[in-house]
Length: 357
Length: 138
Image (cartoon, rainbow over all chains, first blue to last red; front, top):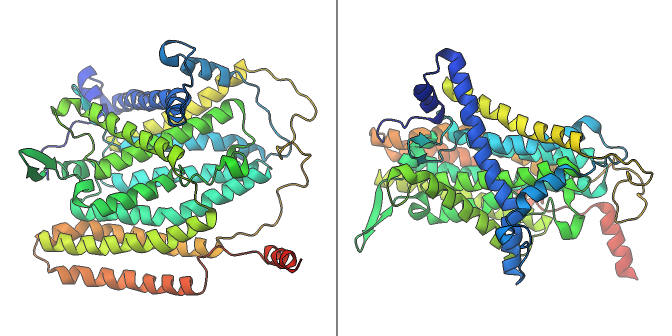
């Protein structure tokens, strides 16, 4: 399906700069990875210290950060310097290697997920690092490594709140992983491939034309029920409201990150935002046509950024508007509701695909 | 091949960024050791006991179920990938659907059994139950 596969970012660098051999490939891959990694970090930099506070303030009728720079934007470098220069307090009795490794795993695993995400074109550059045939399964595998970090942090901190947070993280992931992947599988039934570029290009056709306006065959329009299911499971996967129970600030202080300070805290905070954006990126690729949108293909990257920021705004709306579910309610919603619904969706989709194909 | 080089490169960058931030912070930050500062947080009280204790793993049965369903999803993925191409190649739909339905059905029966035996409900620990009865008696 589709035309010739688009040139990936590392291949573009190899060709442009004429880098020879395997070493050239490695250098190109490292440069491309650094660019993609820093784009994602720039998103989290804007989202974490600034956008999140501004949005929450707008919901609660306040103004929030407005003193440093235009619109308070310079709070971003100020916060970065301030947080990195804080003293690191190592509590008594922490399990030392695990306590130090946990904050590395969360941002690293979430960043790793972006390696297979097709982020679209900006001019000649196609922001897509790798396109293996198993890309779609791989991205879910990378995204779920995050819960390992939460459990490590929770268990190694020697704090009761952290322990509870870590245990809740496991319970939540167990309850939502299966519905998430089974719902994603219903998309694979339509696309017939696990390759990310294939899933995106399968959504480029026109579904219907209403009053001269073409509605693309995004899977959110083709199968809205699966979209809602996936969105819900995705919110639980990334641990945002109404499913932020591993953190639950009003119940267990800060959950797994209670005992973390200084750079370690920054890494957890940053990792969470990278994880939100990864969730948005998976949602965009799976259901919202990836980087497609009105206009030429060469501005696709802008549409992709709009989509993942749209998802970020949705999580922030949920944070302000929706109450948190209880852990026992979560288990019941996950295992008695979402699991059954997701399998029903899979079977129904299989029948529909079988009839129309 | 270059796919996996690129993924490995992002893994390296993904590890370098946090480790770099930790290093920069280690060079910048002060260290003011004080007694009492390093106790774990327990709402401002002196912490009682550690966390290396026996606790009720509420979701033990759920975790077992998860393993079963996880393997099921992994085994369903190849089926989902070949489904549409196979139908377009002329294989009748029922021939493709029945094996999957049987496979999912067996696990669905397992889920019904787990549901009825209360394995996927939030279990109350015996201590919590006894405390509740005591309070109810008063």
